[in-house]
Length: 418
Ligand code: UD1
Image (cartoon, rainbow, N blue to C red; front, side):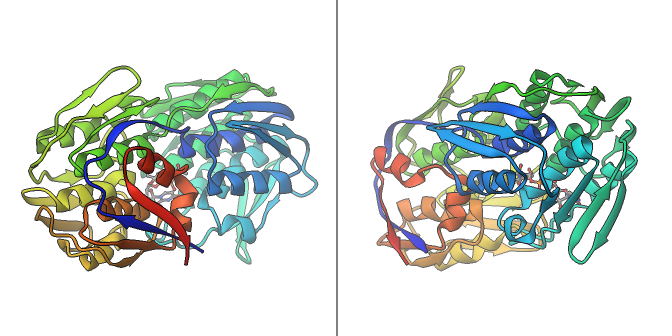
């Protein structure tokens, strides 16, 4: 297992490019199951979660071929429409094969993902949505069994604006008979990216990016080609890396409008941030204020940037209140930040951070989930002495070459074996 050793690094400076979005790539790769033949995707990041997706697509009969950031997926009818626990436990997003398999082949067997570090993360809304389209759903011996000789469009109101649920339903409804309307749909940029790819394949999806999405089912889809959007969470993390070290970092190849809520909060805190169409720059700042955030569905403050923002707030002047409204257990990083000397009081869904610039002390810490790992690396950049972040495999699930990108900006960081 790898670990990351981070030394106090001084101000990071320079330009750094954003990779393709993990959370767009995953549903879009699974959507290829809706059309047999060769799909071509560009700007697909090199990540463990992408490898797990390819592994599952391979098990489902597809061939995957990588050339740099281009990934070709050759889809053919699977022998078994089954996603086993071995793959699903590695990546919860495996549930996204449910909708495509069911719509295209009339059946799907997908292992239940189980719990994870950031909470119970149920999939009931995915299952209810498939049922609303007429599928027979059963949960047996740890597997979801879904059958539907034919899916029929319906109106579905999501109780929570679920990202994965909206994606699964959009994919299934694309091949259903008649029209499906999703109310209280998730509005994340990744939903729009998936809708764009479905439409390239011949689907009729409209309204993606708003809370009502309409899908007119079609009989058949065909493979297409697509450029994945930039990763907004990576862009935000790199921006915070520049900010927390008091440096000037320009994050390129990103879509600043996708991280507007972060940019607003950082400006409120005292940072000068400039942007153009595809890049955003944080300018040197020596002192910033504590500013509260509450995570919310897009365009609100992304839960996937909460941990990194919390690290930034440990170095602010004054107090900030961080409220996590999406997941019930997403403060696992608080304990680790506290080990580094941060002054944070966590309650169930609220954490009070009392900022003290320069008071973090390097120590061995443990990454508990993907975004928590990133927040510990950020803390290591400004802590006094060496910080060792163990269990870095979490980071590799979602950040492409983070240590190389940070090193190119002047960070003192290296990977080692645990
Ligand atoms: C996606 C992202 C993840 C991000 C999250 C919220 C991917 C691969 N992952 O996860 O990085 O943190 O959106 O922006 O895109 N819920 C239910 N029942 C369900 C489904 C969800 O109750 O069937 C609840 C969840 O517990 C959570 C909320 O709805 O409280 C939102 O979860 P959801 O948007 O579904 O997250 P994911 O799609 O799993």
